[in-house]
Length: 250
Length: 323
Ligand SMILES: Cc1cc2nc3c(=O)[nH]c(=O)nc-3n(C[C@H](O)[C@H](O)[C@H](O)COP(=O)(O)OP(=O)(O)OC[C@H]3O[C@@H](n4cnc5c(N)ncnc54)[C@H](O)[C@@H]3O)c2cc1C
Ligand SMILES: Nc1ncnc2c1ncn2[C@@H]1O[C@H](COP(=O)(O)O)[C@@H](O)[C@H]1O
Image (cartoon, rainbow over the protein chains, first blue to last red):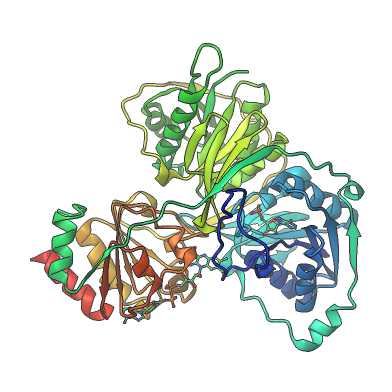
C-alpha cells in the first residue's frame, strides 16, 4: 500500500496573527511558518501504518510558493519517503488543491490519502471532502482511529454528538482529528537524512490543473474587540453582577 | 437563474437539530438580499434519512420555508456524507437553486464541500454574516481575522456558523414532498455510534455553558461543574487540554476545532484562554473566568474575572446560587 499525505505550510499555531493595515490579508512577512498541526498528525499516522508493515511508502504532497519544500522537509525528517511539490504563488482554493491531490494520487497509485481535517489559516475544512468526491472514494472525515482490515479501513470519527464507527473500502480518503495521535519530533539524524530525500517539483499544468478563482477576498479585517471587564473577588459580588448588571441569570 | 435557496436539515433520526433553524435564518437573509427579478425566492429544506415523518413535521414549522423535500429511504438510516451530498447535488444540478446551506457542524462541514465538489463548485465555510446574496463574512485564523469573501459562481454552497444567526421562528406551515433518492458515488458502512446521553441542554444552543480546563485536574472534579450547570440550566463544555487528558469526552470541546458556542453566560473554569479556545466562545454575551493565575489570558476577554483557586471559588459560587 502507498500512502499520500498532503501537507500545508501555514503560520505557526503559536504566533498571534496581525491583520495588514490595508485590510488585504494578514501579515506573513518575517512570520514563523510551520506545518499545519493537523497535517503533522496525518504524517504521523501514515508513518505508523508503514511501521506496522501495512504500507511500503509514504509520499508527501504540498502546493505553494518556493518555500513550500521546507515544510515537505519537515515531514521527510519525521520519516516520510519522498515529496511532491506543485509550485505556484497564486491563491489556492480547496477545490483547486483537491484536484491537484487527485491527479498526484492517481499518478502515484496511492491507496490511502490522509489529510488534515482543517488548515488553521483559512479554517476551510474542505479539501479532504472534495478530494473524496472528485476521486469517488469513500470518505472518513475527522478520524480519531484507523485500522486496516480485509475490507479496507475500520475508522472512528469524532462527531458533534460523540463518536461514530464506520467501515470504509479501499482506496480511501481520510482526514485527521486532533486525538488520532501525538506526532513525533524529528531526530537529528533523521533531519540530516531528510536532506537527501527527493522532492519532485511540478507546475500546476504538469498535474493538469488550471487555477481559476471561484471566490474573491474583498477584505480581511480585525474581529470586533471585547471591552475590558472588571475584577470580582467573591461569589456574592459575582452573582450580584450577573443578576443585576449583566442580567444573564435571574 | 432561480433564486430559491435550499437548506440541508440536520437530525439524528429522531429529532431535528436546532442549528437547522439558525441556518434557515441565514437563508432568509440571503433571500432578502436577492435582487433577481420578482424579488426573493423561496426557501426549501432538504431532509435525508429514514422514517422522517416527525422530523419533516418539525421542518415544516420553520418560518419562511415553503417546501420540505424528503428523501426517505431505508438505506439512508445512517446517511454518510456521500449519501447526503449526492441528494444535494441532484437537487442543485438542474439550476433550481441559487444557494445551498447547512449548519457548520461536523455534519454540514462534511456534506457541503463533498456536494460542492460533485458540482465542481468552491464552497464557503462557516459564514457569520451575509453582506450580499453572494458575499459573506467568515472568521479565519481561529477568529483572529474576519474575511469578507464573494462567490464568483452559482450555485453557492455554504456552511453557517449557527451562533451568529437567531433561529427562525416555528410558526410556519410548509408543504412536505417526497423526492426520489439519487445514487451516491460510493457508500460506507455504518457500524455504530458511541454517544454520551445527557439530560442537559445541547452545548451549541445552551443559554449557559460551564466549561472546565486542565485546571480541573481530573474527570471526577467535573462533577462540580455539572452541578453548577444544572443549577443554571446550562451545558458543560471543556478545553482541548481537558478532553485530551480524558477528563471528558471529545464532544465537550469548545474552540477552533471543537464546537462554537455563544451563550448568554459562559463560565470558564481553570482554562488559560488560548486563542484556539477563545475562537469557540468569544462571541458569548457575558464571559466569567475563574483562574488562580493573575496573568491568565482568559481575563483579557472576560467580563468578570475572578482570580481565585477554583476549588474554593466553584463551591462558593454554588452556595451563593443556592441561597
Ligand atoms: C491546531 C490546534 C487546534 C486547537 N484547538 C483547540 C480547541 O478547539 N479548543 C481548545 O480549548 N484548545 C484547542 N487547542 C489547544 C490550545 O492551544 C490550548 O493548549 C488549550 O486550550 C489549553 O487548555 P487549558 O486552558 O485547559 O489548559 P492550560 O493552558 O494548561 O490552562 C490551565 C489553566 O488552569 C489554571 N488553573 C490551574 N489550577 C487551577 C486552580 N486550582 N484554580 C484555578 N485555576 C487553575 C491555570 O492557571 C491555567 O490558566 C488547539 C491547539 C492547536 C495547535
Ligand atoms: N496547499 C496545500 N498543499 C497540500 N495540502 C493541502 C494544501 N491546502 C490544504 N491541504 C490539505 O487539506 C487539508 C485541509 O485543508 P483545508 O480544507 O484548507 O482546511 C490540510 O490539512 C492538508 O492536508
